[in-house]
Length: 163
Image (cartoon, rainbow, N blue to C red; front, side, top):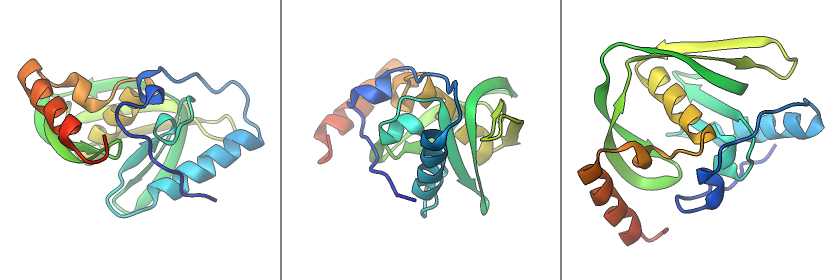
């Protein structure tokens, strides 16, 4: 297993919608192992494949001591009144911005055996599900901010030492 380097905002792979996984083979098994290893670090709730430079629909997660992954996830349901919460992203390191997220989310996809997987939850789990499925659509959370907040976020990103 390998902890993979995280791609930063501005990398084209983060803006490109990820392709569905059509065949589960050794390359996909390796991708899942790498995603799990890359996520299993302090402060990481999830990592989407594009964040490690792979344009495929997969992400791993690590919340409340539990770790997992999902392939070809579809955000199936969100509910409740959207709330403004502090959100960060490994691809936008060190910066946090108020982001609108629903308090409940459900995602449906498959595992490495092709069996259906359903992930759902509230709080951090709901936030992570929305955040990671956005990555798979080619959206980084700062792209979803209101106009004035996005302008301020972009200024901070441009001034950061990693950009």
